[in-house]
Amino acid sequence: MYVPFETLGEPGDEVDVCLIGGGAAGVAMAVKLARQGHRVLLCEGGDQTFSERSQALYEGEVQGNAYPALKDTRLRYLGGSTNHWGGISRPLDHYDFAAKPAAPDTAWPIAREALDPYYDEAAGILELQPISPDQEIAGASLKRIHFSRGNPVRVSQKYAAELSDSPTLRCCLAANLFGLETHRGTVTSAAFKSYQGVLRRVRARYFVLACGGIENSRLLLWCNRQTQGRLIPQPAALGRYWMEHPHATVGHALILNPAPLDLVDHFNIFLSPTAEAIAERGILNCGLRLHRMSDVVTQQLIDELASVAPSLARRFNTLNSQKGGIYSLLLRAAWEQEPRRENRIELTREVDSLGMPRARLVWHQSALDVRTIRDSALLFGDYLRHHDIGRLQLADWLTTAPIHPPVEGELAGRHHMGGTRMSHSPDHGIVDSDCRVFAQDNLYIAGSSVFPSVGHANPTLTLVQLAIRLTAHLEGRLGQQAAHLNPTILP
Ligand SMILES: Cc1cc2nc3c(=O)[nH]c(=O)nc-3n(C[C@H](O)[C@H](O)[C@H](O)COP(=O)(O)OP(=O)(O)OC[C@H]3O[C@@H](n4cnc5c(N)ncnc54)[C@H](O)[C@@H]3O)c2cc1C
Figure 1 (cartoon, helix red, strand yellow):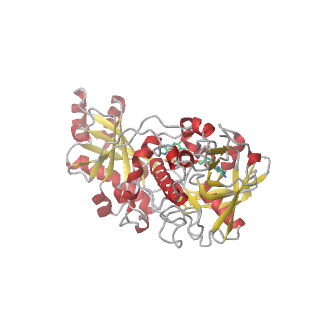
Figure 2 (spheres, protein in one colour):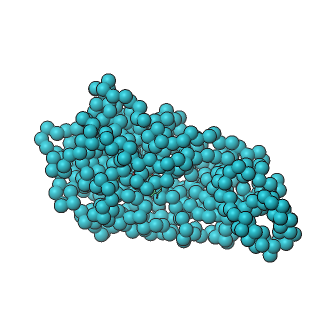
Figure 3 (cartoon, protein in one colour):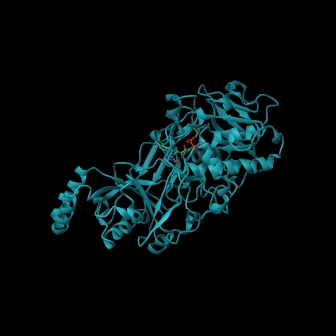
């Protein structure tokens, strides 16, 4: 049921769970908890559809490597960025949860087995296609990987009926979190501000912040400042260890023998270094995306090759004259970034129209980040050459030392991760392994801001798995009241 902003915080109105932010994480949790019969309030800062008054609150600054304008990397209305996401999904690798030798800070406090029980339900919510198992490629230090690439689900449309009709779910739009009050380690109320500047305080047994991978940090930094540090007394990691998946075109390849890569039947294939190669090379995880190009591009690449390797080019030309003899590939990649304290969200002096400081992203790719993509591409190049399957031509930006990340093109996946990382200890993170803010008994965080490290897989499936897991945790704390009312698995 949708409720007007003015009704928020009416006397005797305490809810079981107040979810703040109606994106993939917030909507999935709200619907599931409401089906269990719990009294849920979902407060979404945006409107039902796009509005400039809401989107403008995402304006912020970027410092460091080239990155898109923050306002353009998220949508701020009901459904959040599921309103424009691509739906490309894959779970993180098992070894993404362990410490990688090149960057020990990549360890999660949980193993992937802690998320596996929530895979089917998360895949159902996101309407994923079955994902085939990875296959190691003989003699390559690479494995063939797969993604779900179906129609991207829009959660606000999918769950529209429950958001408006559920008897236990109240949904309030244009309710912008503006403060969290805390007393002796318990959040006592959340303050929401309307676009007219009116404040309402909501009381709940549990609060879940699910405002996205930049706003979760920004809001906690702001709320912590307002409480003079009582919300997060150990803020060393707050806003820190922010990560993206850098994206770029990393080269082209000419393929003499398409069979080993299964290119005859597939226009796009995906590869990634094996766990052993990651450890041996001292790199992070990486996803290589191989796209078959047209015959025109193939001939252009052979012509370019002629100037540096004429005899090889002659061989390619001879084969290419036999129809279908030669394939060419565009190599794109998305790779893991090491968690580094310096990469962060911080508050600017400038405030938005509601009076909250804007976000500044300070983001650099490290030497390890760029070595990860260069070495992963070279693994592929070595494989092609050693087995005489083809030849790789690295993109210019990867051939000069020191490597500088590209300043144009895709740049990154718009995957906002880290900032409120999960850890064993408040010295190194903001939430514990249940996604609970260390210093608060009843404040939780949902979304990719809790990721301590990020592999190369797109993040939404993992963050929805975590959200469903958090729902189960909250159900445990709330007790099984009214559990008989509704089914527990979300379709
Ligand atoms: C163009 C694009 C393509 C993408 N493609 C993919 C893909 O193919 N695969 C993939 O896995 N990921 C993809 N992503 C990332 C994906 O969209 C996000 O991982 C996911 O949507 C994050 O969900 P969320 O619920 O954590 O946050 P969001 O979607 O950011 O939702 C946060 C919600 O909180 C609300 N909110 C914000 N501030 C406040 C406040 N102060 N008070 C109350 N509410 C507030 C917002 O309005 C929003 O509804 C893509 C992203 C973009 C931009």
